[in-house]
Image (tube, rainbow, N blue to C red):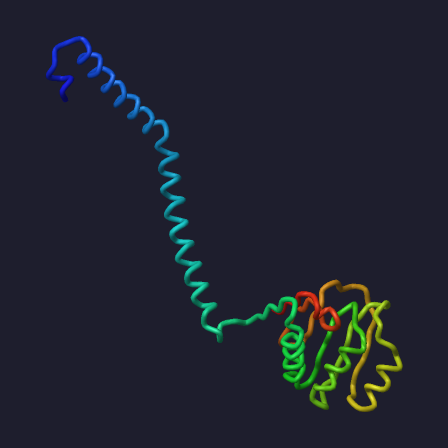
Length: 180
């Protein structure tokens, strides 16, 4: 404003520079308007996502909404107890898919209801022996073992209704165990 009142050469140059600066700013805004609009849209989306994340995290705070369990190293008994609870829920049938079965799963299956049929799908390389199955069936019938190499992950399926994805069912409790 002062440069407009003063009548010397420096004031005129400053006034011209100010006008050129405004012209350049206007060109910049016009050329980059779409970029600014996209940035604004991204900001709004981030705010929406933050609200949704807050909702999800708030739901995690309510324990009855948690449908899965994650066990980390050192929670061996908790993971073992959860498997026992799952086995006890079966009324008709338990299907276990695990390529690395050994006799430790038989110890867990002693907790099943007496009339529940159990089928284990395991690999040819599993450590469970026919003699173990025969002895088990004398006290806790009916257990069937089927050999296959078609599966990689481990699952427990209860009464053809509930399915649990497991990282480890036996000695690998010492590693991380994940449940769906």
